[in-house]
Every structure is written in structure tokens, then in C-alpha cells.
Length: 224
Image (cartoon, rainbow, N blue to C red; front, side, top):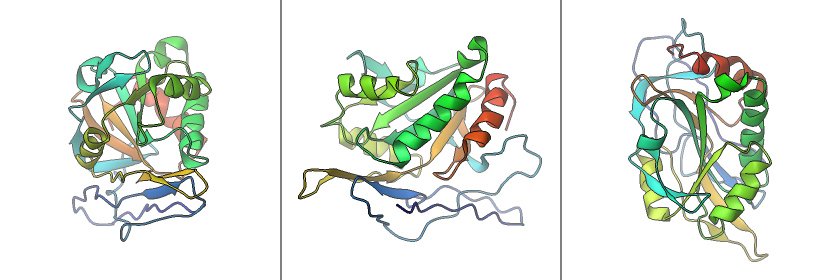
């Protein structure tokens, strides 16, 4: 499968924002869909200690309340306040980019001391809530890290939250063979506790090494 992404970095000082068609990937059918041209994400800050792409525009954490894997309401803003939060939209039956991304983050996170791991939340929001029940989400996430937070719920609410970040999430499509295709932005947004805004983005081709480099910085509260 090919994933649409862009790391074009302008030489000038223009402020560039995320756009809805930023990094679409269609998981589940073996084909890739695109709603349009892939947008430039941001300008890379040359003096940033982070290897991820630093956003020129900082995005607010979505005002989002969904159901967590214990079946309880989870208020994203309130319950992740005070810690770095990595946010990703995807679904458990995705055969490629979703498990790869969660796996890469899980490997990088496990290399940190326990006290630093505790400073980072990883939140996976389902784009296929009809299939991704709390139990399904918990079982799937446990294969990467038992502390990962899984959220599921009303798809319209999920789509609105994603859209506020410039991430496009489309309605899942059930294929003739029974498999599901969910087209969604494949980027991870990193929110820092200093202002609860997204400062760094990671696209679908981000390596494990990049997460291994950046997560200790987040844990220590280093500004992007």
C-alpha cells in the first residue's frame, strides 16, 4: 500500500497550516484513496530539537468526550491535561499503517524509564466505532502497550474532532468480501502540556528511530 504524505518544507518564513487532505490513507482494501492533493503540513523549525515536523500553527486539543476501553466516558481535554498527548485516528482492522504506527510508538515508549513513560499519553480514536467496541479496542491496543488509551463512540463526533485538527475522516465502507475500508488521516499529533496545543506532527512514514529520539524530549517537557 502507498501512503500519501508530504514533508515539503519551505525555505521562507511563511506560516503554513494543516489541511483536510493532509495525509489520507485508505486501510483495509489494499488500495489508496485521496480526496485531493496532499497539503503541505508546516515549515520545519530549523532550531527545533525534535525530529518530527514542527507545526507553524498550533492546534487546540479537541473538546472531545467519547467512551474509553473500560466503558466509561473519557474527556480528552480534562483527562490528558498536564501530560504530553500523542493523538491518532484509526481503526483496529486496518492491516498496515495503524498497527505499524502504534507499534513504532509502543517500541519507542518502552525504552523510556517508567517515570518518563508516565508523562506521555498515547490516545487512539477509532474511525470505525461500529466494529471497535471498548473490548475490541482494549484487546488490540494491549498488543502494543497496555497503557495506551482507546476511545470509541459517535462517528460524527469523531469526524468533527478530527476536522478541527485538519484531519479528514470518512465513513467506513464495507467491501463485497466483508472487509472494511476506513479512509483517515495517517498522522500523529503531539500536544504539549504547556498550552494543550499540538506542536509536532508525525506522518505515516515516520520511523521508530524518530519516535525514540523525540519521546524523551516530550517526557522532559522540552519545548518544540
